[in-house]
Length: 312
View: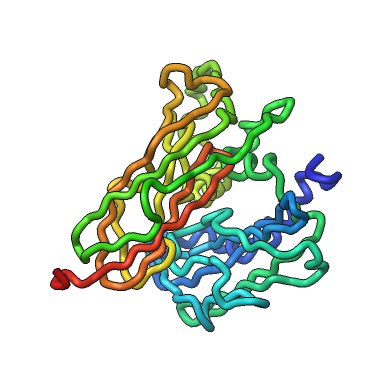
């Protein structure tokens, strides 16, 4: 059973129906020229009685990174247009990208995210319907897969992240700056050791084509924010808003690896993640760092004012 008596299968069915138009085009791979679809992921409860509505998106392109500035073509209502949504969209399906906090007396109203790109407008409608309530189990199923389920459920808490130095920086076009964050986690999910199974040679090359298509479309494999194999705690840096491109060296930074001493079970994990970032154009950029334990993430934003190369 899922959260508050709603079967997990029912939640999956609802998500599948909402994305059916996207999945129907799974056989066609577009490198560019397609639009971005906003997606409502569900809602969370806050200790003070308020709620977080959680959104992601589906960039239909396999290669093109689409930019839609905050405004009439990228707005959230009521209360918008800017309620913390991105304006830079990485390819394919990106889940659990941002949260919008709504008051405890929100009731049955909708929070609507409108995106218009490549000449097509799409909307995502967020509501507090019980079936859309998120839990750690839902995050685990989506970000690690049902095969990672444990019984009893692990008491996982989201990692913490703190900027080293100021979260407001300046930079020069083409010149890298260094950014660092301190992160920590409770050590969940714990490392699960599984015995390797011998390959069934009789089945080599005979995998079902539908399964292959599903795996190719999987948000787990296409997610920008994810841990590399063998990493228990890490940080992913992304360009969130800005007038140009941002190059990270590196984008996914491992903090604690599974084979590190004392890192195989529950217990506090800590470390620092450092990257260098270079900008292509002058202007104001918002970068986002996600501390990640493979199931839950915590975001931190950095504002960088980038000056022209001849400014100094």
